Length: 427
Ligand SMILES: O=P(O)(O)OC[C@H]1O[C@](O)(CO)[C@@H](O)[C@@H]1O
Image 1 (cartoon, rainbow, N blue to C red):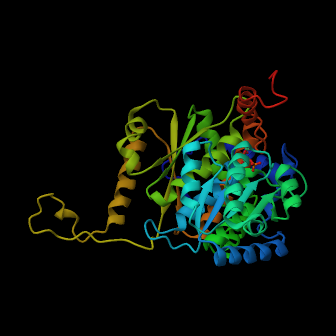
Image 2 (cartoon, rainbow, N blue to C red):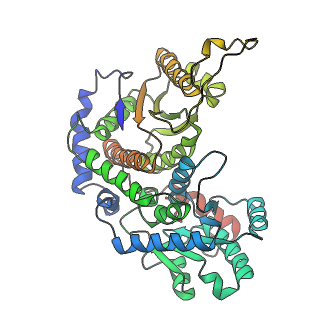
Image 3 (spheres, rainbow, N blue to C red):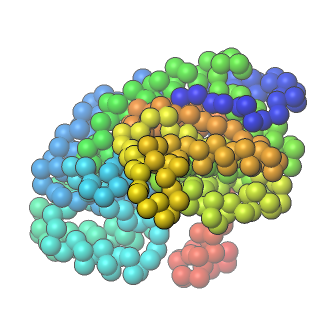
């Protein structure tokens, strides 16, 4: 993975170097705000090997008795799993050993009714994932899905199809799992939800679907090797954090994560939670949005080219693809496309990316380019780790605690009051 800053004016970057390095050191020595949640930094090498093996065993069991695993969770207990699972699958003929279906990531009654109907004649298991064990969306989903599973297999057999990933010792889900005897996996105390894909949160469902979790861990480890060195020139996490802050102070309020490969769509969704929950507090933070090109060049592209000049782009470029297809000569050439004969579609896509970059830079949209070698478990894990270090450094540069998310409680309090949850009457 490499980061290219060619299309950024780096004249003022020197003013940010010292602060970026200071913030990086604060992150690494654990002396900053939220330092109880830095377990993800060393987790690529320092993890529970016994649990890792248990995850592989559970995954093999799921593969042997289920065609579907319903992964129940929201936010950090959903987005990283979906991002990697979606990116590594074939678009049409799934190559997965077990199909992952998601639940508990919204509150749609329509979705739940249709899901329960769909599952009726399928063999499936449930992985309920919630660090707190009390989040409303997954809790409601689990209540429905557990009932349906018990109806299908009987209460005792159903227990062997339920896997709970939650806090080591506390919370409603932990209590329920202990009472019912479900196999449980741990969301470590020192890893916040949006950083938790490296734990059993991500590892169990991804292993069940057939992702090589050794490769995934190798990618995180590679990230740790590259992005935990205190060197401004060679550690792109520090430099990228500095550039984001430089652009932020230059009135760029929005960062747009751009991809030209639909497989990366959910990587962007994961990235949005990481940056929004980490930076969006105390009246601060770059607003993270994403576009999927070239699709969005025909919608948001107009705004990016010509709208308010308050944004910059970070473009994800894939350097090598597993598949590509050549455009052929057509005798009639009625569509006028013969000038592309002999070129591949990915070549055209790349020129769309390069052309768009030129146009946007001309239109005063600073562009950062992140180049990843390919779409694999290893490269995606390295990319995740890179963004995680970046957000820690960047958040400390902004003077905020990047590891809490107090703002998300407000909607919950108002919703609970409307729903009549005991204790919320006077909120
Ligand atoms: O895993 P949990 O505790 O259910 O939380 C899910 C998500 O909800 C949040 O706490 C926000 O409400 C996120 O930070 C978190 O990723």
